[in-house]
Length: 367
Image 1 (cartoon, one colour):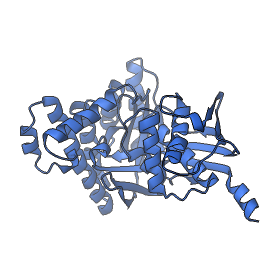
Image 2 (image 1 turned 180 degrees about the horizontal axis):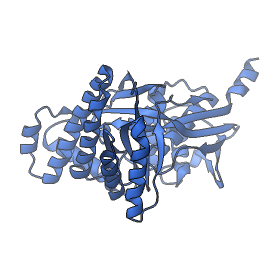
Image 3 (image 1 turned 120 degrees about the horizontal axis):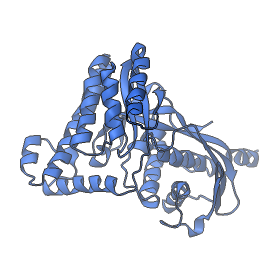
Image 4 (image 1 turned 60 degrees about the vertical axis):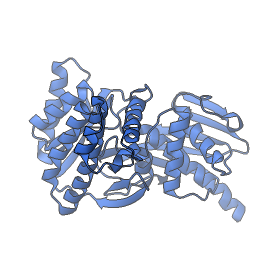
């Protein structure tokens, strides 16, 4: 009976969601606060364990075969690097992980800034955890997935995306303290309001060096201020006065003010004051555009068009340099918002954007 149960646990299907970050961008690697929620859309993996150390990976027409005993950073490229990275990081942490045959499918837009990479990592992580009965909780598994992206994909991301994919609950946003990984589930009851995701169709890329430069700038600013991280800035005017580099001043101001916006939005959600959240979303976008300099033309146009068409507020989401925008709007205004954004794109000869309504869904697990 035990053998049959073990064999059953080594095969199956698992799913991990993408995420929308309601607010709190580029605060995670500064030990700050973020407020994401999981999407119903995500990545599914089906498969079973193998008797050897080989990962046989399939996604559509793409495939890869990797011997885990030979896996190291840089040895695998493309989407397979995220999968191999998770298995390799689990092994490096002392967990007994062998090979597997894994088939991936997705209903999450790739490159839309909705964290398809973290969904891929977390789907792999929960599958391998179940296949090999690894005694590791969701929070620790999120950190393994983050390590995989840092080391094997070469993206120095913070913990936001992996935590959202692993820890979110249906109907809730996740208030995450990125310093100690403390989590608070915040109920999301928007009443007649909706969160509309606009895929700007400008591919989201974090591996080109711009993201790493932003993180490095923040680390330099913290060192010059004698702080462990920008989370520790308590007197913003004094901190800005202590920095002679205008670029570093812009980065610091964004991080400090964005952390404040996160905690304010949490209180507004608790009070049910949904209409007051809109201005904070737009303020976040302007800060990301002007102070952090990670926005892009399609996002700026989408935000302006959405707000002009009646959205309470809008902002880019994700690391920037492409991806998606979210707009908070009354359900009755959604058709006007969609039309306005699509028309603004058509006037500029851009690819038509796509839209989806974001509903807080559950985190990663077996299906």
